[in-house]
Amino acid sequence: MHSEVSVRLAGHQEFRFDLAGAEPMGHEEGRRWLDDQFISLDCEPLRASGKVLLADKVLTVARAAGASLMADPAWSRDFARAASAALAKPVVRVDVPGMAVTY
Image 1 (cartoon, helix red, strand yellow):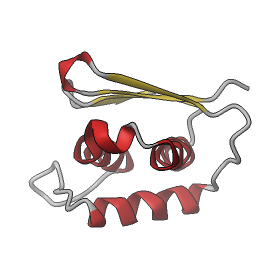
Image 2: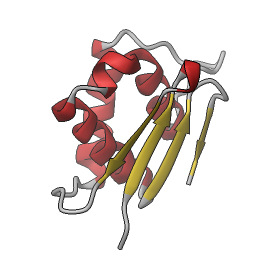
Image 3: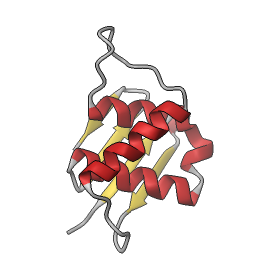
Image 4: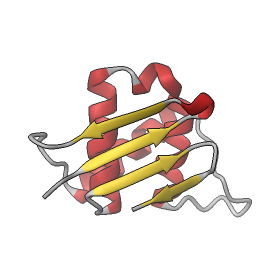
């Protein structure tokens, strides 16, 4: 099954991560990885209620990471694996300027 995560940043920068051959993360492992990155990158909740949905976490981590971390092969591969696992979707598209995550 084809598995891919793509991230579009401002300035029409786009990063695509093909997960073929990558060791998959489990759902809980992906959630924990995103939680750790959310904290270490000082991300803020998108909703006034403070509730953070998994898709919001993927979006805010991608936004905080920016082009520098997305260009880092090790970090970006872990991000893609975690996003796919946490959202339980083989194809994930993150549009940071549009503030949207689609499957």
